[in-house]
Image (cartoon, rainbow, N blue to C red):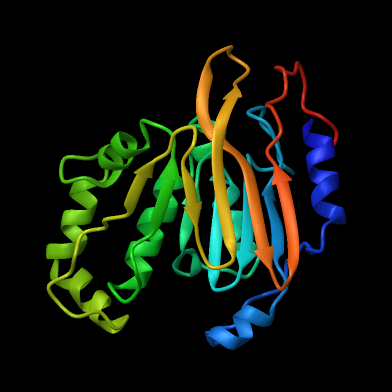
Amino acid sequence: MNRRDFLASMAVTPASLSLAAAGDRIPDASEAAAKPMVITLLGTGTPAPSLTRQSSGYLLEVGTDLIVWDHGAGAHDRLIQSGHRAVDVTHAFFTHLHYDHCMDYGRLILQRWDQGADRIAELQVYGPPPIARMTEQLVGVDGIYGPDIRARIEHKSSQDQFEARGGKLPRRRPAPKVTEIHAGSVISGDGWKVTVGHVCIDSGSVDDVVQEFALHHDADFVRLRRPLPLRPRTREPVP
């Protein structure tokens, strides 16, 4: 299945694309269970620069879960524009670790941690190796953002802001729960299940990536198959 067919399949499923603003009120479990599945396209671009299209990213609202599916450059801006917040995201899945599929991952972790003020559960992250090493190199003690995180934990003004957001000292470090996935892995949530298989990436290598996203919600069964990556393009496709 190519990307065009994939997007068309989502358009005809019992799911709608939503850019409605989300209020601050958190719906209860019964309200969440009654909602239809909603898929928002955060980015459908390629690695080629574009002023109109962001890199790969999808947002899936299922039951009480809000799932980020890839988070390439610009996808986080689109997440905010959709009316959602980083603190609303419960899970993040990465099909593979090309930069146009994961560049905004660090931003998601840090903004969710900073705004969440230790009042929300840790982000659950799933992806192929080396997603665990990537996460450690981003937000670990000796990671790229280690000095920034340490300052936000130890500096008095940052502590004051943390408490103003409802946090209670001492502040914890960001610690997303990372699981490296392989062919045969199965991950389940509130009305959804992900099955992992092998897919050939355009470089010719075979990575363990999410191949099939099977969702069961309100008696509707929706099966979305992730397309094989496109061959390299010489120019940006028309939006």
